[in-house]
Image (cartoon, rainbow, N blue to C red; front, side, top):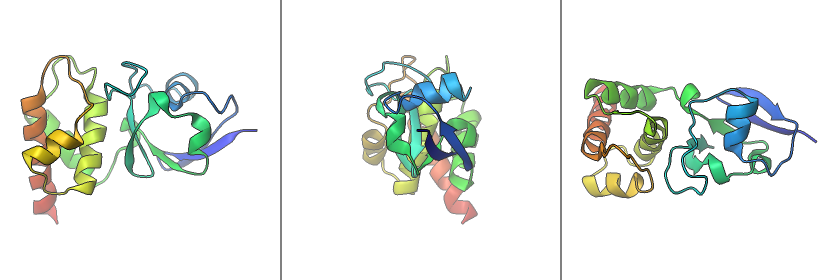
Length: 155
């Protein structure tokens, strides 16, 4: 039996093993390669997507558990907060190698949805588990503050 869910606002189904990690369904079956494989054990954050608007590590999420739910990937991240985060990332050149950035951006969008005006401590807590091997953490934090300011000004 197929697993049906909303993916980036559109009905989607996967006719395969419901224990298949969502990450591999996204990348291998649906050809959405923005979500990255980093560690496979939910420790690095490269595979972060939104499940019903909340951050979720897709590498350990069986696709069967998303039946009837809303999944958003970096390709489908839209709206005022998403656009502000993306703009802030570009404005201060957050990425170096870029590998972790889709997970970082998705986590930042999720953080700002929960805490529209985060403190440094909120950012550190909300972004914990997102590893950047290039150590762009200072720019990531600044971009989140900048994005929060952009969203606030547009309200």
